[in-house]
Amino acid sequence: MPPPKSMPSPPEGNPSRHVAFAAVAIGTFMSTLDASVVNIALPTLARDFGADLGQVEWVVLSYLLALSALLLNAGRLVDVIGQRRVYTTGLLVFGIASGACALSGSVIPLVIARVVQGVGGAMMNAAGPAILTAAYPPAQRGRVLGLVGLAVSAGLAAGPAVGGFIIGALSWHWIFLPNVPISFVAAFVASRAVPAAALSKERFDVAGSILLGLFLTALMLLLTQVHVWGVWSAKSGALLALSLGLLIAFLIVEKRVRAPVIDLGLFRNRLFTGSAAAGFLVFVTLGAVNLVMPFYLTRALGLSTTEMGLVLTSLPVVLAVVSPFSGWLSDRLHSTRGIASTGAILAAVVLVLLRFAVHDAVADAVTVAALLGGLGLAIGTFQSPNNSAVMGSVRAERLGTAGGLLASMRVTGLLVGNAVGGAAFLAASGGSTAPAAAAKGLALSSLVGAATGLLAATASLARGPSAARPST
Image (tube, rainbow, N blue to C red; front, top):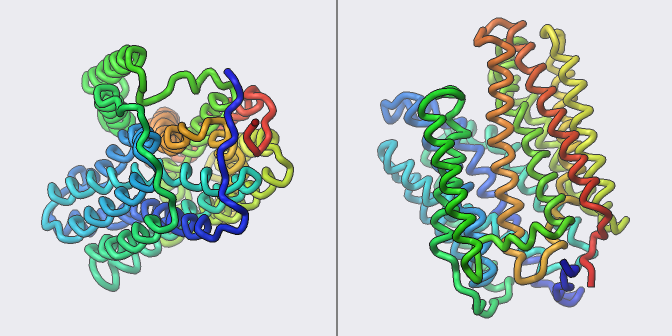
């Protein structure tokens, strides 16, 4: 496959790109914060609506399912109708849906509004990296994508604290209401700062888009519910069969259309495929421990909710600090493979250390917080250079697809990691809530995460050397 063409960059002194960055960072922070802030509101929602936890958890799952199912489709839409149209529309949809969430009086309307929020979030997350890759020169790409990683980490870190404060001081309705004016302001700013693109001559593949959305919805539903239904249950088996059938149908359709939702030719590019695979595996590594860690902290260490929140915050805080620096370093050294691979190896090492630290519940809260901070250091070191490699390996007319794939790999990787890490935790703990059982569960989940971290490093190294700036 010939190397990708250089993509045009605006002049160095063009200030509109910095305004565009601000609009993308605001949207990224808002969508990430909204994904994490709702978790802490679930007990309040269950009480106010008179619902059980199994019902209100769909307030979280509905957003996640819609987001993950539509990211790749939204990325393709960016390539067809342009970055500005998709991003500003996504902001407006997200803002309107946030208002509907705040006004909901029962679980069902809230879940429906959250699905619409997920539609807007998918459009924003797919268009954001494409906007920044097109707006900034290649020599600054890693730094800028790293700063967006800072916005992601800040949203994750601030979610529990912001949600707890708002719910305590006002009500759960107010965790959604601020999104409305912020979304509209950000949409106005983006409409002024992001250049309009001419409509592509390629048609949007409606059939492929529907099949892809259905496949991802079935897959994500399986990954989020397999721990409830059981791996060998009839529901899990039926959903797995449905997922495989939809995937096969999607691939058949994609081979027959001129302009598919996903240009499968991209995967002949070794740099693109290796970087995408490494990104997926690193988030499997993270997901293997982040879902089960609260169970260890409460059951084995006996921490309160406040203490647990402080321990867990160490990961996104360190991640937020490191991501911009690793992006800057990859720009400075004109290399992404070495830095990204180092981050993946470091993640595996940290999780091996975590395994020995938590064995038989001997670790204290400070040690666990330090190791989670080390995992944040590893993910932050990996993420910005790897994202830069993905976005720099495609032609300008495929930036939306690449941006959608980046976000999709992140969400899918976390869900797969949650599923395998949760299964490992249950297998090792035997379903017991005793401290020693929780320690054994986290120890096995950590080893699973370490193994996928090594696989991520292998994929990153195997993709071959690459410069931080695209080939000409």
